Amino acid sequence: MSYWSETMERADALLFGRVTYEMMESAWRRPASGVWPDWMDEQDIPFAEAMDHAPKHVVSNTLATVDWNAELVRGDLKGSVQRLKEAPGEVLWVGGVTLPIALAELGLIDEYEFVVHPVVAGHGPTVLAGIRERVRLERTDRHDFRSGATVLRFRPVTS
Image (tube, rainbow, N blue to C red; front, top):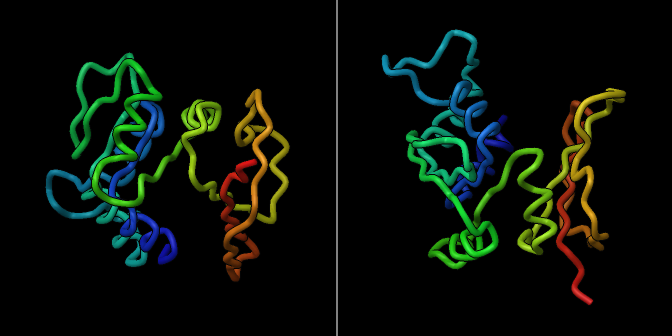
């Protein structure tokens, strides 16, 4: 969790689709009581606090409003995300399953971060499934965990 806490703390803003936003909010939003739920371990709290405080942008055509330090992104996805990327700050962190596909197809991802777990699931969504164009990548970083999981970072190769 310390790795992900540091990752969230480095992000200037988060960009989610509706489903990921709602999932993250249900897990990581500080309760109205101000007390984190019992299921959280002490090591989860820095991540929860970083996630809770981070500015968020939510791509959705179905939500009428958002809160939790969030604003809606509607309409022209390419133009909207390009404006977010040009805003002050350096790191716009994207999470989700379908939004990264759209951003990859628009050439708006500057860095990819994949987490490889030593488990074969056999079902479920696959990362970037359905992307139409091949994106050549070069590895920029690797982080191995005691669990056997590995984080791999890549940036697109421009030709």
